[in-house]
Amino acid sequence: MNIKKQFIDGNWILANNKETREIINPYNQEIIAIVTESDETDTQEAIKAARDAFDHGEWPNLTNIERGRVVRKIADLIERDAEELAKLETLDTGKTLEESRWDMEDIAEVFRYYADIGDKDGGEVIPSPIPNSVSRVVNEPVGVCAQITPWNYPLLQASWKLAPALVAGNTLIMKPSEITPLTTIKVFELMEEAGLPKGVANLVLGAGSTVGSELSKHMDVDLISFTGGVGTGRKIMQAATSNIKKVALELGGKNPNIIFKDADMDVAIDNALNAVFFHAGQVCSAGTRLIVEDTIHDDFIDALKKRVEKIVLGNGLDDQTEMGPLISKEHLEKVSTYVDNGVKEGATLLIGGTKPKDTALENGFFYLPTVLTDCTTDMAVVQDEGFGPVITVERFTTEDQAIKLANDSVYGLSGGVWTQDLAKAERCVNKMRMGTVWINDVNNYFPQAPWGGYKQSGFGRELGTTGLEEYQEQKHIFTNLKPEAMNWFGNK
Image (cartoon, rainbow, N blue to C red; front, top):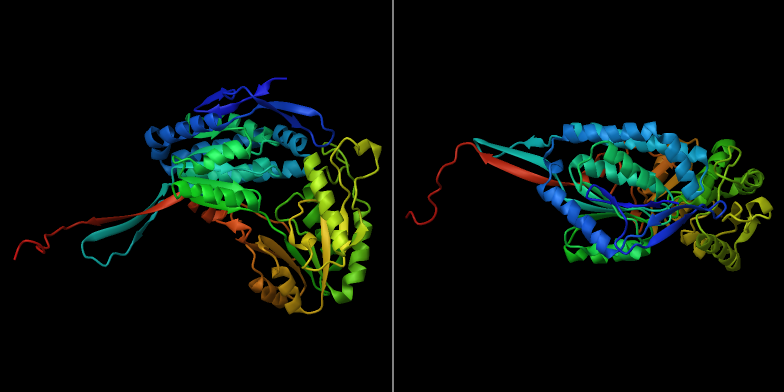
């Protein structure tokens, strides 16, 4: 099996230490690839390449239109190879092929969106209070950007970082998750094909403890963008003080999904499933906290259970599969412990809570879709991000109580409200402390709208115009068209 290499300064090379890592299919634990394992020295070389490309290369000095053409070409190549990328993503992560295909469409659209708005990013002229002068603001690239992406949506999260950084004129070093790097490697091949100059985009393929740490603290990195866990986010913030680099963090969530008694029951139930069981719940915005009005609670949960019982687990490449495995043995054990502890805290296990008994699934990291009822906000299972196919159910009686429950979390990434009373929905969303709130929907996102969280879900925004602004610095340029001496000093 050929070793997949890192990409530094326009060259595909092995790590200096010659170490490698096996990439495992979570469906059956088969080895699907061997990749080079970068370390600090590789990371330093990648940073140097990005620094040289920014300080002395052509990319930052191209016009937005010229950079946009290259980024648009990347989108075209992703669209051309979408099926190959989707299958690779499914092998790497275990998610269903249908989900991966959706992702590829979204990824191409992200690159196109930023190419389009980059074309129109000409700064602005602002009124000057001084006669015979021109005052203008221009947007310039931040510089060398480090980008660290998670294992659950490897290429989608990469696109949210790559596209705006490139359009803005930055150079970059990307570190994908060491356990799901395959589609990111493929897209770097496509960026090379699109004509991206050498050194502009560099790829290192190591662990966070080595590569991520070096990226976070290195003095020649001007910005670091990270998507992942709170603990790692704290370490990155601390390391970034080395040179006061810009930091953007998306750190996950524990997201409430409020169901009022006047909601369309069938649609709300269907979307309560969608909110949690896509990609086996390994989604930062998963609506894992179901908060249901008392008067419909029992009927809602009974109907939900009947649907959960029918969910088909299996190989993500099988069209009949509705939910794939968890990402790894370690994560399976984490989710299992999370549920077991929830039951010890007093939650009632309604369904699931174990590995499936189907022998056809015994080699994969599968966990049954799980529902825990009788949950309260003082339980760790309600407060902690379990990142698995697990729904916790809480009750409420009043609108104010529903809002209080929803906000009772250290996280603030996303939430949902289900009701046919839009005035009530607006009252709720205005008080919910989250970066995105859906009314009668879940998990919808698109390139034009910003994405990010409140509280310990992080800071900064991806997507939308703010996603481009994260990778820019503003410069005010003042021109005096008729300079005159003031004769202030030494002329009396």
